[in-house]
Image (cartoon, helix red, strand yellow):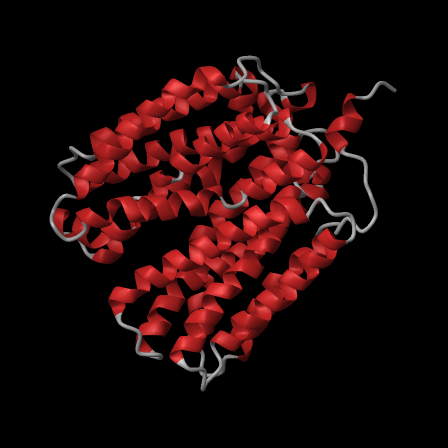
Length: 397
């Protein structure tokens, strides 16, 4: 399989989609795990978040390791580690042991994620890279949606362990496809930095702007994941059983946005204008959803459509990873973007719920407005053509 071809790109994206189930497979199993280990649902919810701890804290170190050993070896290592931990978790006898295995599983998870992202960046250029990175932005939600669908038969019947052992089998089967990936280490010299310089990436203002552009809208989006179901049930009278259907439709809307963005962002003028339109329409619908007097059917439809426009902007942000790396460390920039994503998983509910609970919704609406429009001020929209920094680095002086 030729590196950088569409089959190679789609295979690389498949690794990101399937490994995303490390997080998604536990979302619906919190109550079952709480009952199995006699802990509160709040305590059991750490089973969902634990896998992202390594991703949120150690992305630069993982990127350094990927650059040293090569993308394919890092993917093989990550798959083996995640599969082993998922299998052992299916046999865990203590809640503390389960949490520890989930944290270690997160190390395998982020190893695959960052290595696959590096492969996409290193093996594609120009319009194909833009499309690949736009598709990348929806790999995680797509993997989460598939995981939610796959584990739903095991909810409430004491068979939650099957979800863990089943995912271990899938990850081991995925190893069979790794020989199709490039075997050489594609990291550039600027990306193979010594360990003592791993954290120098945080001194690059453009990379910090990228992190904020990723983190701001996703912190709001992931905070709303916790708020919206409660709002639909308590304020709009939606039956709890239908929340899963609404959530799945919202995820599929986001996936459709990423696929659509992969093509339209390559259009010189239409692409940037569509980003602006997506940001404005997305945040407007987000605010309208919470206005008093909106009917239940209208609110559900608004929420599903809104996910499309907001996710379009997130797709554009991820396509900006190469251009925001001013010193050739594209892997580092991608790692920081992913780190911002996983930090937003922790910060979203913590920051947004207190604002939503205030007597006045104005501070909450202000947070939605700022977070969704901030990326437009932090990243270049591309109204003028810019040289690809990775290609430019490769050119002789």
